[in-house]
Every structure is written in C-alpha cells, then in structure tokens.
Length: 369
Image (cartoon, rainbow, N blue to C red):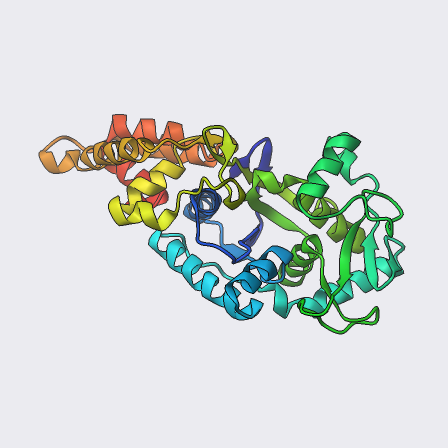
C-alpha cells in the first residue's frame, strides 16, 4: 500500500490519478519536469505493488497566458499550443516518463465546462453577471489555511482578479468568462466566452474519472488557488468529499532563491541537460530531494547526480563480479521505502549498500536505466 504524506492509499480495483499538466506556451524546464518525473515514479511504484493505475494528465490549451504568447508569435493560439505540446511530449519521452492513459485538452472540453457552470448555478454555488459565471469561493481560502491578505495576493498573481467589482466576494472566481474580439471564444447561454482555468481542470477530471480521485499530482505552487478551487468546484457539484484522497504537491525548483519561471528569466531547460547528460542522471537530479521540498538548483548538481548514477550501476553489477546476490530482504526494504511516501533517499541508500537485485529494482522503479 502506498502512503503519500500522512494518507494511506489502499486501492480496490484501479487507482485514478490526475496530474496537472502544462499550459503549452514554452519549452519544458526543470520545474515542469520535476513534477512529472515524481508523478511518474508514483505510478511505477503503484504498478510494482500490483495496482492498476490510470493516469489523466491535462493540457491547458485555453489560457490567457497562452493566447498572449501566441499573439506575440503571430500564430493562432491552437496551432501555437500544438507545436509547444509536441516539444513537451518529446521531452517527456526523453525523460522516460510513461505515456498517460488520458490526455484531455481544454479546448475539447468546453461543453463540459459549460455543463459544470450550469450545474453550479442550479445548485446555488455560482451566479451569472454580465456574461460571466462566478463560483462562490467563500470558505475556500480557510480550507487552504490562508488569511485573506495572502489569498488575495495569490489570486491576483494567478490572474483571478479579486478586485473585480462584478464579483460578490473577492474570493469568487470565474467558471466562465466573456471573450473579447480576438480572444478564443465558444457559444453558451451566457454569451460567447471561454472557461476559467480552475473550471477546466475540474471538468476534465470529473469527465474522465467521475466524482473522486485517488491521487492528484501537481506543482506545490498550484496548491492555491488552482487546486483549492478545482476541488471546491468538483465537491460543490457532486457532493462527494474529498475530491482527491491524497495530493502529491511537488516542491518548486528555485535558482538563487527565486522560483524557476519564465517571468524571472532563470529557466533551465530539460532538453539542454539531456543533450549533455544521461537521462538517468537528469532523473536522479530531479529526484534528489524529497518530493514535497523546494529545491535550489546549482549547475554542479547534475554532475553529482551522474556520479551517483555510476555508483548505483556498479552496485547493481556486483553479482557479475562474483559477489553473492544481495539478500531478498534488501530489495524488499528498498521497495518498502518507496511505498512509504516515495522515500527515494532511503531506497537509494539501501540500493547502494546492498547492491545486486536491490539496486537493480530501484534503478528500474526510478527509471534510471
């Protein structure tokens, strides 16, 4: 049985895992890659434990940031998104991230967002104003453990406009927004418009898996407002709580203390590292700190990861040099560590010490090839 944080995840039948995917407007950097590699390890560990896993990783290809980037590039938003998605898929394959079971794209789920907005209105959890549908968000920040000032700051940072005078409460967020000329738009009973970001993920997850998930993965920086509102909308429309039994909120990657982000100009691209280092070294780099911890990247880190990868492979080949095979207990201990909150550090330490089959199993489960 896998434990994530303090939550044990016994599964009867399949495990339903939703991974918050990319907004395809730029090339994959280490911050993106870290989330998807950790999610991939969770899938591999669950499957090793005999649990069938279905993974849904969305593509947010309806987003104002994407629209602006496409406009600057002189390209239609959907064509621009498709090209960026190609590069992302190529990076995931190069990183040995397993293909996902479902990959819904937001632009093909607009009818489901409209249905979600309609249901929220009928249940009294939303209201319509000037062609927009707003979700009543009172209580969401409290559940996230934030005060009003911090919640407002994060809502503003992620484009939710808590100062919008059309809203009854600064905590309310758009499920549906009217589209101006030149913006992507679709017909609805409230006029031409487009989905809100949080509603897109809620609609895609509900459509794919129904009212609840076993595990939801995504970057820790998406905890609030995105994941908090996604879950709140889903729970409001279905009445099922919790929306996700466990959350894999992967810590952010920083450079000199600042979060890796295009706006900060401090991106390190995955493809650049893979041109000069084995994929196993790059994966080990991304798994080198506990999944929930933020991590400050330094250029020398990948060299250290490559050196450790060599030690692991030497440990795995010890039996070929005539040494007795590592006892089964070593392999079992390494697997137990991975099942205990994806404790990669302990599993690696056991693998290096025990060598043989223990090391080979850890290399396989972490896809360090």
